[in-house]
Image (cartoon, rainbow, N blue to C red):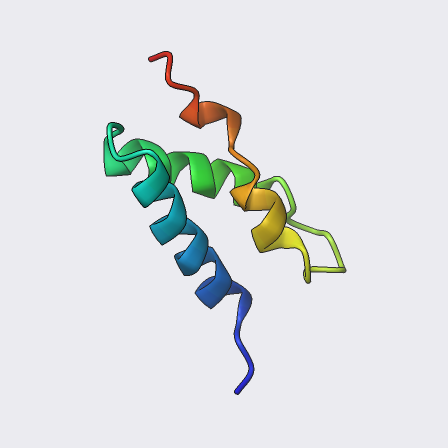
Length: 63
């Protein structure tokens, strides 16, 4: 079974929501979307979920 990039991003989302439980899930979703779109147009997509998971700046604990 091949795992798609979207499935990896879903796993990243679950991980970050668990890691940042004190933050609103909309904030986590927005940070993931912003980080994910940074890689739009990149031909090699294998590492995009890993890079998205690398603590998006929008998830700093400072509001």
